[in-house]
Length: 426
Image (tube, rainbow, N blue to C red; front, top):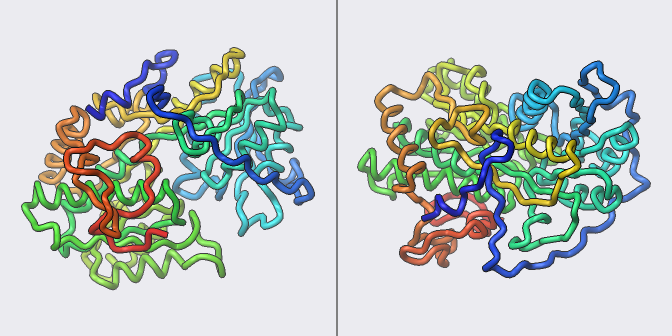
């Protein structure tokens, strides 16, 4: 069963995770990335880094390169909160942050340049918190072989992945976020009255196709099995803005995209971007008399943005996963690994044991909450496996044949959206 593929021994009692190292599959070597430009401007450390540390001068310092604002009420804030979790649990650990490392806020700054600066300031580990930093992470690991490097997402450390690079001081860390998306999609389908669900998407890649497709699978399953409705009656539309958050003049404006959903009859809007436009515009739509609801993303407290219309939040606990990696590095035992941390199905909202959770909002009815519990239980005991064929891609080609169960690689490398979804695959 699929569940067995994702079991891994806890490390130090702190983490339920998996490292996909399947000896039966041949590793595929990737191309070495283009060397980042060493002439790019780098932010001065006293202007653009923030240090949070204990008073102990012998602390273990971790540098974090953050793609967006660290207080964005979404993805980036969740990583900062994870660092706070680590510092609460591991005395003597300090964090340096540089946020807004992206083409809009810092057009001449590359992640590897920021990492150089953090390392010069004493960082013994560097965490890159976005898929966008894939090549920066590898380049940094190659340039600084004595520094532990973590890339959130990516597959350079996965021997059975498509782009494996043998680099002893580089690990990829990810959470099995698609489970949160399956749950969120189910909740959306239970609560929609129009049968129209909008998905506010960032840029298009394997990760975002994986997560939006998971939301669709959860929605379709619960629409058909718990609401007894025909699949053709469910509309699931993805609109991509072009990046993880708004860059004026470069991306679509997520405020307008959210408004278009709410004004176009989509009474439930899910968000996959880092910032809270789905919540903010949903609140405005509700105040204008529209019967609308939303699901936030990644940050456990996300419903607080508009509690009355929030169905829930699929949220992600990076803290225990980070802690395990930092403990290993502090002990001189850091090893390259591909870690895909799992939910704790006995208690998915346990911040110490579960990488994936779901915070319920006021707009999720008690009845639908009970149905959602059944769905979550089915995911946990593997009586519900939505990655079982037959499933087709958007263009009608086969994703999974009849009764075929997806491998981790088939889930990770989602090359198209799925049949039944409305939205671009490329």
